[in-house]
Image 1 (tube, rainbow, N blue to C red):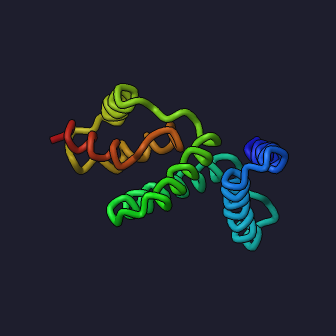
Image 2 (cartoon, one colour):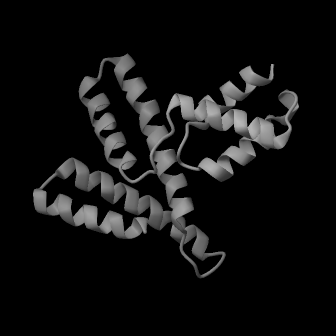
Length: 150
């Protein structure tokens, strides 16, 4: 379970005195706890691994955007910090699909849904998100889907 991995990684970061890793893992745990609290108002359960993967994916996306902004502004020290955090967070995500695997998955989803035009993109993306949550860049998948359907 991911929560156990976070706790173990936090202990290791404390032992090795890796401040960047420790603070990033604490950010992850805080985001998960925040989602737990919002879910708790609806029921007495905690979020599971699929929701945690979604949280981690959003964290990586945010840091990628920040990294790009810092690079453009010439703030290399902050860009490096964002890149380091991306690497740490990515350790807890499932393996990302390569470009070839992404293309094969999109083609398979098009075939499975019987999509024939751009109006079917929602069906295709829904299937991809169900099958490959946390494993692909859905913006890339969407662009590829549009390209293949047009």
